[in-house]
Length: 123
Image (cartoon, rainbow, N blue to C red; front, side):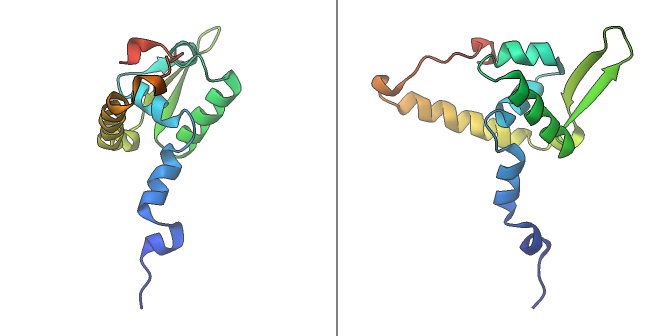
């Protein structure tokens, strides 16, 4: 019996969740789908993320080819993050997650709704 490639790499659903799993990866991709951002802008949009964790998750997304980092030769150096071509293929997945999450939140009883700390500009 021939093995499919994913037999060695894991279930395709598992691979997808591994790429966007992590507390801030999905949110980072959602934000960056709208356009390139600097690290400071991302920190303002996700204030509940520590700088260390934000940097770590950005590096993982870059390592996995979903985002790209561009360094401008200025003083001080300017770094900008944007979605890569491979990352753009995740747009339907991210949009579906947004739609499902919004509908789910609308069904929660008021007692379960917690006011978010994040910048509401994302909505």
